[in-house]
Image 1 (cartoon, rainbow, N blue to C red):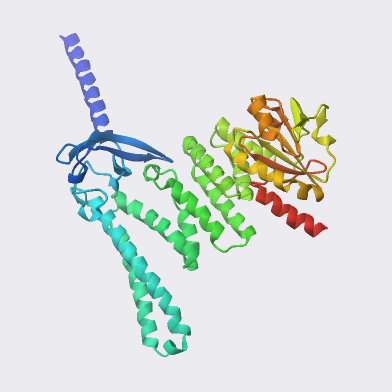
Image 2: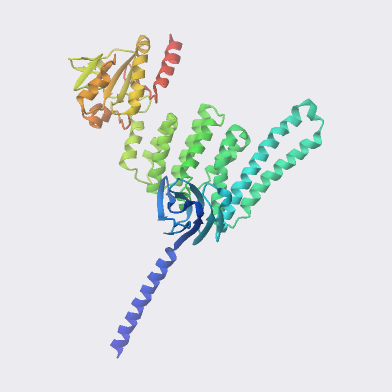
Length: 473
C-alpha cells in the first residue's frame, strides 16, 4: 500500500512540474494579432515588419481579401514596426498590445486611419501631430523674440516680448507634460522621449545651440542593452544622429574628437557583457566614422574595442580594428615586394622591385581592383593628379587585388605610376601586411615608410599636398 502511495505521490509531482513548465512557457510566450479593414488595398499582400537591432525582420504576412479585411498573427514582440502593402504603402505603429484593430481606406491617407483597442497607437499618433505643431510654433516665436529685443521699431513693445517668452515656455512645458503623464508601463512612455531626442538634434545644430549639452547628456544616459531599444527601429538613427551632432555642433576639431571619444567610451562601457550587441554596434559605428572620414574617432574606437576584456570581438570586426592598431599614423609600414605582373603606361616592368626601391619624399600606396566600382571612379582621378603630385615629391604605386590578368591589364593600361598584381586577391601579401579589408584603401608614407595619412579620398590627398607641401615650399 505504501509503495502505491509513493508511486502516486511521484506521479503527482511530475504532473505538477509539467503544469509549472506549461505555465512558465505560457507566461513568457504570448500571441499578438492585428486585424484591419483597408478598403483600397483589397487583394494586395500585406507584411508586418519589425526590427532586430540594425535589421528589419518580417513578423507576419497575409493577403488582404476583396473587402479589404485581413488578420496578422505574430508572437512575443514588443517594439516598433510597420505594415507594408504590395504598392509599398506603409503605416508605422507601436506593437505592444495583444490585439490591435485598424480601419481606414488607404495607408497613404493617414487621416482615414483609425485605431481601436490600442491606446498606445492613439497616444503615439497624437504626440506626433501635436509635437510637430508645437515645434513649428516655437520656431516662429523664437524667430520673433530677438526682433523685439534688437529692432528699434519693436524694442519699445516690451510687453509683447514678455508675452512671447511666456508662450515659448508654455509650449516647451506642454510638450514635456505630455511625456510625463504617460503610463510608465507603456512602450510609448519609453519610446517617445527618444523619438523627441532624434527630432531635436537637427534643430539643435541649426537653430537652438543651447539644447546641445542636454542632447549629448540624454544620449549618454540611454541604456543600449535595453531590449526595447533593440526592437525600436531607431538604434542606428540614435547613434548616427549623435555623432552627426558632435560633428556639426560648432566645436573645434579637438573638442569634437574629445566628445566623440567620451561617447564611444560610454557605449563600450554600457555594453559590457553583451557580446552580440557590442559587435553589432561596434561594427556599425566603425563603418559610420570611416564613411565620414572621422579617423581620429574610428582609431579611438578600434583601440578601445581591442583592449576591452568583457566581450570577444568577432574575427571580421577584429580585422578592421587591427588595421588601426597596426597601421595607425606614426607607425612604420612594412616594405612591399611587388610580385606578379608589374605595369606602367601599358608596358611591363621586367625587374624585381620593392617599395623601398622607390626614392621619393612621399609615396601614396593604393590598394584596389578593376571589379571595385568605387576604385573605377577614384583611381583614374589619381592618374589626373599624378604629375602635379610627383612634381611636389609624391610618388604613387597601385597594388591590385584582381584575380584576372586581362582585367588587370585593361584597368591599368594608361596609369603613369607603377601597378602590380599577383592575382591572389585579398590574399595578396601586401594587403595582408597592411590589414586591407576594403577597396580602395590608401596610405600616404614618408621616405622612411612612416604613415603620415590614411586618406579616405583623392580630394583628401590633394588637399594635403596643396596645403602641406605648398606651405613647406
